[in-house]
Amino acid sequence: MVYTVTFNPAIDYVVHISIMKLGEVNRSAKEEMYFGGKGINVSIVLKELGISSRALGFTAGFTGEAIENGIRAMGIDSDFVRLKSGSSRINVKIKALEESELNGQGPDIDNEALEALFKKLDRLTDGDILILAGSIPSSLPSDIYERIMQRLSGRNIKTVVDATKDLLLNVLKYKPFLIKPNNHELGEMFGVELTTDEEIEAYARKLQEMGAGNVLISMAGDGAMLIDENGKVHRCGVCKGTVKNSVGAGDSMVAGFVAGSLSGDYEYALKLGTASGGATAFSDGLAKRELIDRLLSQLG
Image 1 (cartoon, rainbow, N blue to C red):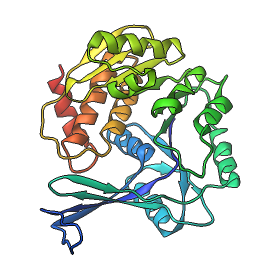
Image 2: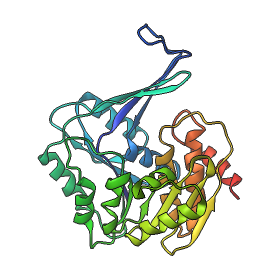
Image 3: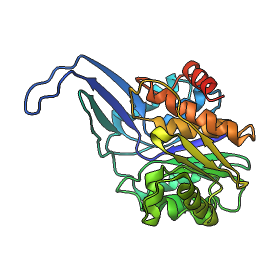
Image 4: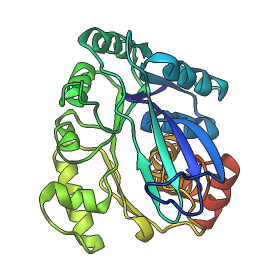
């Protein structure tokens, strides 16, 4: 079973307007509403790819109920910890000439709720996959990823970590199955600017030396590179299409890679991850299977 953790899920309220005028009343041309957060996004795309998962995390208030009901209606299993106070956040995405976001803060998560999540994670069994994605709410300890992975260490559970800088570097000692920094984040970790494939590969291998299994480096218009757990380098170009959306493309790439990796073929996993990320970037919402398959055929 695949499990995803979303510490701070959200309702994404997307507003489309032609021109945004600050200090004035603006009227939308159309609106959309999505239930998300990085882990939930992964679960949604995994569902499109025929992979079952269980979404874990925290929800609160009427917005939390809406999130739970919304993803349940999509056919996604969930087992959230319900917080006693506060409300799950609403993120406002304004799509005008430029794209702007106003993200809510979300509810406080106390020690009792955190322990409840730990108990759910204790139920994971050998062969399960756990995906940890996104930032950490201010009410949680900054080492929460480390604490989770330490708790699961010594068990045959594959962990996927989609995070940045110290949050990622500090978990490498627990040997995550997959990490997915982009090329700029990779450079920031080591205080360097990376401009060539050779440089990116060299520093990706440093992350492997520190404990990472598969290192997937996304490089925007330059495609992606994978150093797999066997030390082999895989390279993939980008899919062709018109970019409509920047929300969830990275999460979709993680979902595609995880789904593809179940076959044991890392070259295919990289291509499926690339196609899944592209399908979200070329859509108003998250990737759909039909477009993923179409883009996958572009990659050979």
